[in-house]
Length: 365
Image (tube, rainbow, N blue to C red; front, side):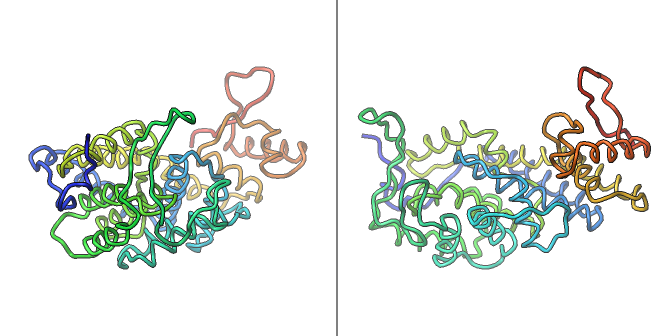
């Protein structure tokens, strides 16, 4: 019978092979330093935009890992409101989205505060404002009182992937975890972020939402590593890309006798990829910032500002006059006038491909 890691005595005295992770750890610290250096050279507006984009992605992708799709504009609006960032096209948001956003912002903006049972209960309550997960009523704002299994497969043919720490031990294990998390140990915060993620997942203290809370805990510790509330890379976005491997490695290391080298190696590679993919996002933000700097005295109406920002943020599909009308909530005639005005100003151009319907794109500037 294969034992789970928590069934061994002193299971949280984790070990790892330093020689196996030293190289990737050094690379991670190097790319982190570079990206923060690049960001610090940006102006205030660009830094704000970069942080807002990253936080929005983080919230959306963390929920997507769990199979839940959140509306991009609602998430972005909810974050902007809470951080007091002035953006065009704010939209109303619902309690569900506000709750996820509140948890993520508490983790990253208040990263210096200690992590406590009470704080985790508040995060959990924010994630499940109705007291339900889908159709199921769950225990909210407290640790689970029932046993927890991760299963898949049809009824009668279920496969058990993981059986969490017994309910009666959850509070004891969590107190131990939180004491370690809040202690000023000599472990580098990047490694501490990886260990905390794994440790929390193994305990699985809540009825639901453990994955999202584990990722928020990771983000909190990464903010401590970066010593800033500004977020420039999204670990959750990269975990989503590598989701299959994420679950495979967790499943493998949950049966280890205490050596978590494989988990740390995977986490550090994932983090490095996450920081590297930020370079692309940064290019987009710089382009957007340059555009508005060049056109700070160009007259635009609110509809034009709204659609132009959407084009810079990454637009789904082709821009047609009908899509413009829909986004800007105006008539097709008004949309066409707005577009023609931007073509005359040399900002938009017709796509070369042509075809039956006319598509528009940003001109080079």
